[in-house]
Length: 232
Image (cartoon, one colour):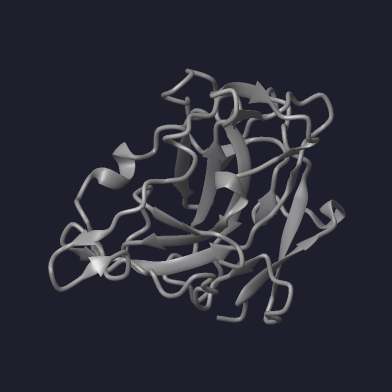
């Protein structure tokens, strides 16, 4: 692959067919903005990642949505699957039952496109726009297409149903800047055991963990996102 990594750049270099963070919500053609199954609000657009030439999923892109209008302590991150067999206890080498990766998308959504995009100009952005530009430089990269930059050791899954899972990319911890006039993110208050608006001018995705994305050989919305705590 010529493009091995993505770096955050100025929004002035924005490519509407490329990779970017925030801005106007973008979905595949003929697809509506996903709805949170917990609070019935429209999910917030966080980013689109375009898979580079030479990648298993080249010619496609992934839009990531997440609900910032509610937060439930049981849905802070995507479900993590662990093997329960006597020989393979733990997360590494887990086989995920078929169908689960769509069912698990309750307050978040992974939408694959083949380049035909619908920018929803009638919906104001909630996250400030930032461009992700391709590079072969690893240092400081926001995204790696080459191999997982594990924080806590290799926890790669083995398969999904009867299909193998392949590493797609990882996304380093990132603070998403809230757009002007966008509402605050709703967080879970562990002391009061209730939801409360954040006082920060930012949004976080999956508690700002390091994210690792895996998929089958054919592009699909059935994507497994594994999280690891930074520096863990």
